[in-house]
Image (cartoon, rainbow, N blue to C red; front, side, top):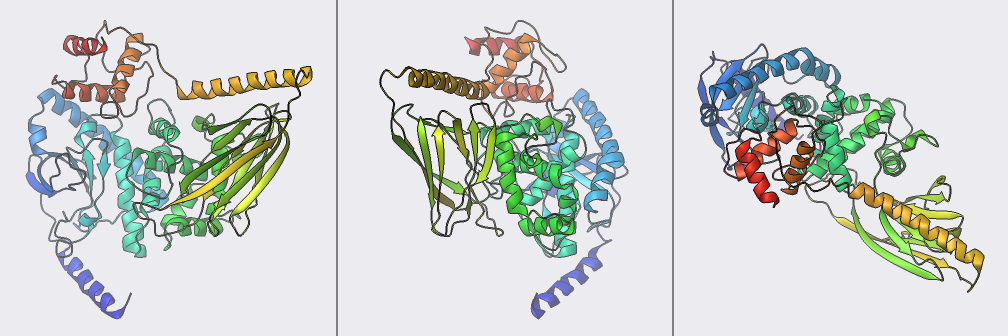
Length: 556
């Protein structure tokens, strides 16, 4: 910080101290005031809304978008207020003390000199459950759009759900992160790590212990759809949240929650802060080594040979990705070549099967690119060996496997790139690599031993393909229509499965979670309400005569 900048900082700081205390005023339930909101998250791109205070608690103000609130029935308002009672009790007795004891405090009493936090509920875009604006932590002289409050923004679409506590915990973690990093340490944390800590709060607080309909289950589902998503490139997609969640579970499983806590209190940011926390805790592994081990664990998830290659978390003990399949002809000499692109801190999983002979795999990338390529060789009995491909200064490496297709049934390579360690922006560069698998082998005509070996290999390949397809295509049987009313709490019903499949088929705009459980939970209720809205039906979340008629009509 140069002298001129430092002087400006001191001057602004004096203004902050002068202004603190002026903003404190008496507030009463029923008061209506304007709030600045984030246009990129607001449903219609507004920058300001009018909101009414509907509840206060010992530590929270609950404001709701006024036009939306006034349009609700008294029954709906009572349900929402009951949920606010539960949320405020959960926040005071559990969320706040747990997160603060681990990560440190938010700015308290803060810019508004008030220990209470403001929660503002308004209509947000699809998929935006909540957000945090650092702008509110500055006076209007510095940031004109500031609300000059410690506050969190939440979507009205989840206002009456039990999951509200998860969204509050997530956004409150961001408020803590701002105080610890920006105010105390004077640095700006990288987005991916800020989001990683906030998303892990759900697990930290025990909200993912019951896996069904949990935040963790949602993240697993999205991760399996796109496991190659970059850990550090942040584009605000569900896949970004999924990959950081899966990695954070592995990191905390193996290296303790203190790594996230200590990295937050460090003056370093991103990967450097995690490496500092690892050194402080006495670990020899660095971030890059942990990331590579995680890419292997996602493939194997087996603690039997090496605990570095598995999750300890019970709800993730069966998590495994399906690698991309690459086939070699079952007889004769052949080769295949695959070119792919990859981004920093992402991985590809490529599985080679087939062939009968000696296999040579050659890997090529641009000289200087920091590729790591662990590989796993599986034998006929399912045993495996994990090794790391040696890549030279020209970006090339190769391995030879004798008697592939007979002694050894498959090879998995996991290229990943660890080229950049800081300064991640919204969109990162892609880097190319190529691998070539060549096999030298002959098949003697009318050789019964060889023929039997090939037939056995074909059966083995069929089973592998069937297992992979079973993992990818878990579909429920088609149903003809709904014959009973369905509502929140109905469990283990064939009609619920039918309903969930119907909603899933409508796409992510209706049922982004896409879970087929047979239990009518809050996710299903929200999906029903979205479908009702798109069909011009009353948005009740109750599948009654009108909604069933519309669904049955569309099923024909």
